[in-house]
Length: 191
Length: 294
Image (cartoon, rainbow over all chains, first blue to last red; front, side, top):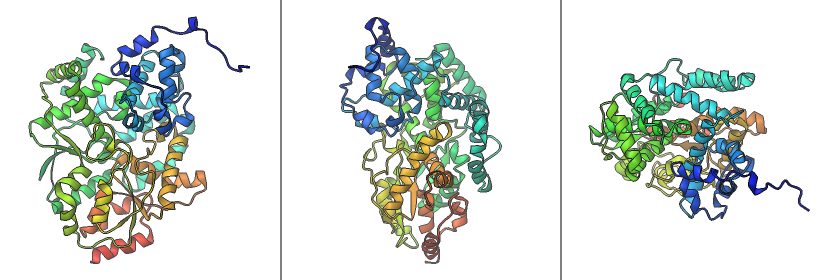
């Protein structure tokens, strides 16, 4: 007896795979032989909705929603362990990055705190040219974790008393140049 | 030896003790670090998660500026190292990406031809300056100190090439050259959780707890690392990890440059060793002070 839902093929998204192929590095998943080395190497696969091996299988089958809404892509910490061990040399971490960006593009990011951190990080860089860690954390807490703001206090305090928490940003000088580069990228369109 | 120095954002902020220790040891090692003028953030893992081409383009701006000097770029941060290196490799391997990065740089009046080598400070110190020179400069050896060398994840991964991704030894050999003993433990290249400490604290704390436990059970007095984020997670969160898991870790987490500084006989203060969140333990202080009086 099966005690799980069966998804009929007609409900799957048959365009999803070609969309993933179109992403930079996306075609790589073709090479996957489902050996599971990635999932067994991943320090966080035990809490992921689906490990990386299963993600690849889901992508091929067309489980669009399951893939893009999964916590998997946001729990990937970019440690590259899977990528260096993959016997088919798939750049798994890059595929995860590509899936992150696709999920952001399609607004499948509800409740994903890592998105808030990443977005604010990009904002720091676009404003100062450099990351201002103190402000980044403040903005992140305000936007994503205000209810638990207090949990950051002891660590912040430790940094502060040890003079490791600068209150003001280090700015780069030629922001004008950086902005010109960013504007040009906007014009060119992402890859 | 002269290098173009890319400190990265953390080294000027939460990792300023790393910065101070690098500044303190560089002259003694004959390491000339000329800071890259007006560098910008490499983009880290976060920028790449939202915009890819932008992330590569801002990263490439640094390489373009560095190319004017035609020297190796050296960075003490594992994330900067990985990202700048990745930009370099992708710039070489993907013509379409190279063309677009080129166009973006051109809008800012810059160009990059791909001829800069990006290196981590650990690689430069160990392989250019060399273990023998460092050992010969040491005023006193760190006899009796047991160190868990922690490489973390990014430094030895895909585009690196100066050490093995699973069993690196570069830092082990350095620590031994300094006269300390390396403890063997399994998790030396495991992930500390990185920025998940901010977004998924429970998960990252568990990774760090396992790491600390592995180091402790193998008898380490301290952990020595090469990455600002690894240091912060293991050092600043250690108290919270103790509270959460009812553990009693008291394991200082040092930068490798601080350990070199101690053997060079530099004052602990100048090396930022008083500003760790987990303070030096008594046995360590005894060894370090012995090293200073040497």
